[in-house]
Image 1 (cartoon, rainbow over the protein chains, first blue to last red):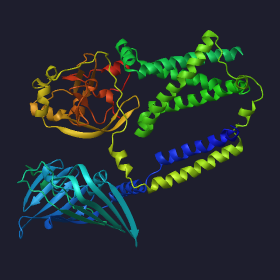
Image 2: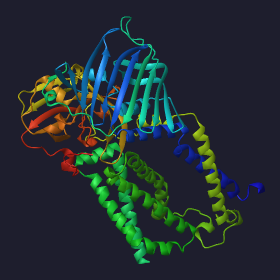
Image 3: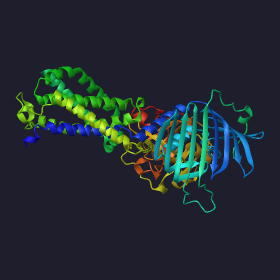
Image 4: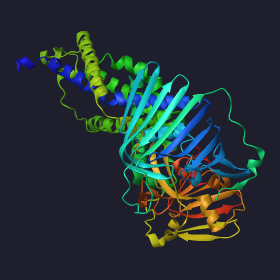
Length: 238
Length: 366
């Protein structure tokens, strides 16, 4: 027994091991946790600025929509070009104000709220930073690389619990990433998805093999244009 | 000495009262029993706690001076009680002023308040039995008398060198552990943000709460409206459903984060049924025939109040209000009337059950 005395010789290292490693396990983040938290925290800061935006959405390599405009958390304006067929396009203007959407096509205005199905087709233009944070909640891995004044964040997804992208339900994923490149006053958000077609879809339901969405945001000092007065009296979206 | 004995007695009585009221609050059966008797147990517990804190603050220095000169057992008892007092008082204060603290802290306070009580019980039992039956625990002499420590104990005395060794090794293990955790390729922050945190404590005001079978339940909307309507369990899926993920907060201090609730907005239900409210107040009644609470009509119609029938993708459990309960996203849980069976629009505002019995705020905003 003599070698075990005094007992404190053994108890002190055991106590230190339990307390030290226990505190590390419960309190310290993994590298990915730290990147994830930083990305989320930064996004809340970025969200406060006003941006000149340009975005494009592709399905299976073909351009579906393009948007140009100006975004702020409170109010945004976009000129939207949507592909109707291979060589024809439909253009209209869209204003977001709070949870309301006003669309002008030719001289005609219609309005709706962000809960309307139609507005889902604009996502994530209405709230790109909130959308990014929602997506990050489903990330499997996150990475960050910094080089020459640029920081590139990337999130990898293998499965979504409940996410839609422009009308397509995203579930299991073959290869899907969300990449955000940050350089000075510019942000570039790229969502590249190879979703696995959900089993419940019938043979006649369209579902893309590839989805690509790019959104570039450049900080500006100007404000989005106000919603014209006639828009408030317009018909509701059906 | 007389003064110390008196303080000891007062301290003991208050502490036992606190434990008894606290445990009665913790256990659903006793809590409900006191509710049925109309005893505001939470308020009683808080009043005793304030008295207890006052007694401790008044006496601690003099008691400390006395006990810290006594043998080790008394010194241990003094420090044990000082630590427990600090933990109870601090966690209790966080629970009382919960609205000023983040969810994690207030849930932590509830856990600390509970566990300090459970951990204290063995000591209290031994101490009380000893006093009552003049039973002496056969502690070794070095613990209860002013005698020299035996070598096997003396050699383990915690000295400055040991403190430094413990601190140094703890920091070392903390650094090694942190480095290993940092390198672990796991994104655990997502889970902690996404997953539900905390658990529901079930509070009812009657022991015999309704255990509805689906066909037995109905909800009537009546009072000062253009018409009255009654819907049944089988009607619920026919109305537009809304699913929200929200944090559920109880006024007693605990919260459950990220709870998925599916139900029908009161506004949507009224619209679908073609009911127009013609008064400024509405009372929600529970099927337990005891509990009710009231709202401004605007609070239910314009503030996204829901009639919830699914929780985390499952139908509500009987004790949680099956088949349907009210939920207001910006109000404490006591406004979330379980087994709701009637919404009555009234000319004057009714004073709800907990406003009458517990002095709770009428609006119950977080």
